[in-house]
Image (cartoon, helix red, strand yellow):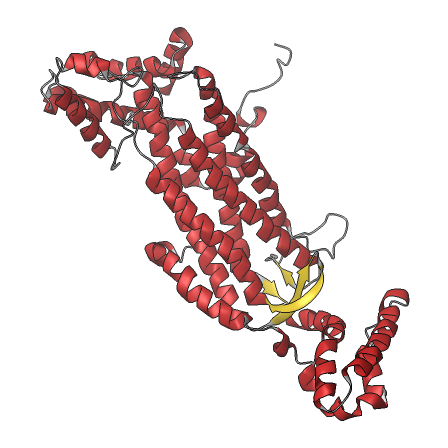
Length: 485
């Protein structure tokens, strides 16, 4: 009323950027109204088929009529019905019955709203995992190739973000891969652990179905099993209230949040390395890093992943709190929350995986910059090796230690107080005390002698732990992801 000049087209209303800007079409469809309500209709068809097979008065004509109208939903009529009835499930029962007059008497027979609501949610969770798992496999594959390529390239390691002993670029990537491999196993387990709510009635006792089948317990169990199998699940939860336990949502979303933490760490590491100019994410030919500073190459994709990963992590609070306040057999204060938290968790996980795939497909490494950083720090790290070499050449360990201590402090003063380069090596070469080992200094200071078993660890880790994880996704592994925004 206050803004009569507004035309309420799609650009005049809030749109979630998770759908309008970021998430893939398949994940956006998975949580769409069309997928949701066509799944409701399929569930009503499964129920009718199973009830017919078990002897209830459901005809072939009724089932055929329902099947022929499974996809043609009149959303305007459903919205109008809901505005009158204030009940979404009954609104869609009436809408389905309108186009299936013959089947109208048996649609939703014996069921409660959660028969379609909860079972559909479980289907969407299952299908959501099926979308995410190949995407995670692609990220692991790209990062595995990167780790293998740079398995032997020495680089400064960092503890406390201070230069530490050398590692390799590939070994560091394996730290990322190990976390992603844990996420892969977690998502696979969460997907496989999902069960169907099944056909349980209003408080989970199956009382309405026991009445329909005139006290025949076996037929009620057969009905539950048949519908579960039609929906593509191996098992149903044996015990439910009106809803399936909301701890199932915790289990699903906790693994997505955990993956968010992994991706935040990976992308933060890349951002730190980008500042050092050692590694950069892909940068398009015409991409602008800053509106003011034309020279900049900001790690925009990694920043996006970090930003969205924080949202994914934060969403875990919703199912934790929801499960904790479900009174007795159920309370409806879960509904509005789950309409947001379940889809948003999967939509957010979807886009950060796709973006990370794009990043790992185009990571740029600058070996010369890495080498320069090593040269700057390695003389300090090599002092132990210099002392050992002098002792082997007949020197006194304590005398050599004192010499190195004095020269190291002088070199550190040049670096810290004067802003100069590390000249410890030059000071060692200029001191006659070290004459016995000057011919061996190049070998003593070879970075590859400081990386331990990093290359061997990379090779074994990729072979034994990473590559086997990718076997189930070989047919889907080569799909590339082009970042649109």
